[in-house]
Figure 1 (tube, helix red, strand yellow):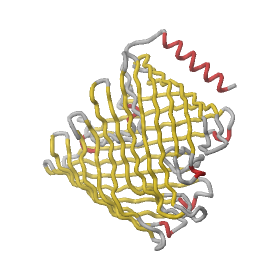
Figure 2 (figure 1 turned 120 degrees about the horizontal axis):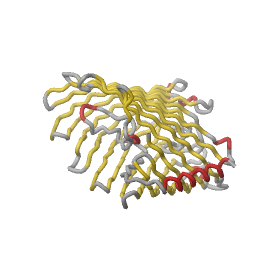
Figure 3 (figure 1 turned 90 degrees about the vertical axis):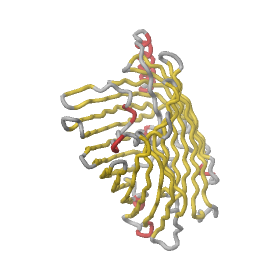
Figure 4 (figure 1 turned 30 degrees about the vertical axis):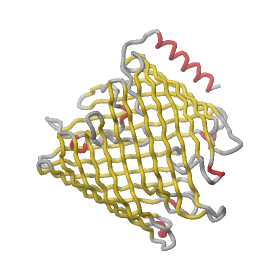
Length: 417
């Protein structure tokens, strides 16, 4: 009954606004891994680019951006199983707010706060209901000698996307970082420290609770007015609370560009090499190329392409594997069609390989995960839009129990305050 009411509410909403449309431009940007707006000068990093096209409302010294969205989803395989698939209708409500507060007379500083929730309600499988919560803090201040940046990102989620999990696993991630940059004309020296903490709520997964601490040194040189080249060295420590054999450390060296990569492309490109080892002598380490690329290309005022590529070792929860080697590529094309219509196409693939042989199947796990989809978006005015979308996902794993495919149809709307 609740689902029927939600569908009716969406239909009424679309009908109502169809008779009250005003001109507005659409800006939709769906990215699994944020570019983090690293191309901004002086390491100002906006927390979440979901708010880029939202008009700020000043309240005293604070600028407030808020959104509220609701979607009705039909998921053909909610448990991501190879057989005996179960489908369901899901209502997902997503309120979000961002606070921006400039500091200083000349706005040398910036403090940002963000909170977002995804509240999923299943029609039949009530045990799968969830609330994902995301919060972030960002503080940046320009100094006479450079800048200081402090960030904290908090996620409490059961989300399965971009993980090894095919079922809901409750976990909390907290990533805190600080960076200090010192400028010498065109040269900038940056020292950074990052602390990443992952904890699981289910006793089955608490042995995988761990922290990852990393110190970094980066030298950046201003090649062009809006382009920096850089070299970076990182040393990281991985610490498991209940399994010291899984603890380890790594060294990595990277080089790249950030800022205006080309006349129409902004972003960051980092490529390098990592050497990772674990305390347990029987556990293989990782030595190989790593990469982190995020770019946004504005071909015209109507066409935008966003690319993400990540390559490197990721901590694993699969049997006796300490890590898996991930090669991840994702692309999103935003195309404005007419005054109020826009089309979004997305495509991605992740290739994950595991170093250890499965002790029961006597083979090494390999996954190729394909994601493809499209969204049609209608913008009523600067504060309201609606969309319909379709997404296909398939895991082509050599472990049959890990293989699955899934079809997701969505209809929803978003309000921007």
